Image (cartoon, rainbow, N blue to C red; front, side, top):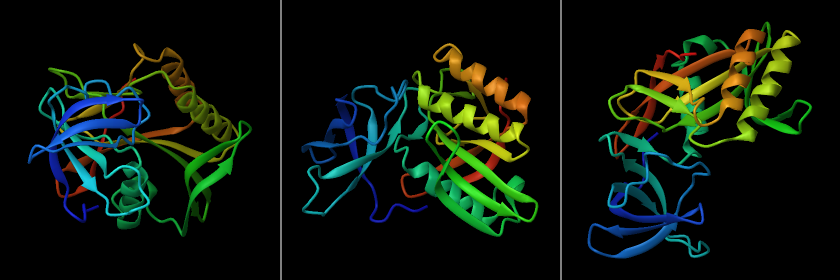
Length: 235
């Protein structure tokens, strides 16, 4: 996935009201741009941090740009735009990068399923039956550790998705939790039990029921992002 047009660089002043960020561009202009991330963005919000954003020329938009990347306090590059994760995964699926899911004959996105009024990110059709895939974007890293964690804030929605996947697995339907690791310098992923114990418990139950748990690292730059390799998911 290439950024076209190219991203522009700036510095973070503040993020507020969840979806707004004040920045200073490289030429000294102060802008308010869209922050497309509903999480806490823990360890991605240092005032003065370098960031990169996409400009919009759409006259109907209220804000002139969208925050895409940030340099974390650990010197890593993180894609904080959670809307990018599904596009990255679809691109990787179609290119055969995610070997565990090769051989599908059809792909559907945002499919309603389950008993809790949910939507699953992808349904892949195989000769043996469908596979339901929930994607989560991972950006939470820590100093002196190559292990990233999810989630970065308590998330009932994320736990709900795991419950839905667990029910599918218990019925003999293939179900997967896929972590799109949008953070450089990462060698493994774990549940952030210290932040959301309910989610960590739901993940353990899902695994026990037969839900497949995968993680794939992204190669990030200010010009492009792509999924490149699998990572272990620690318990």
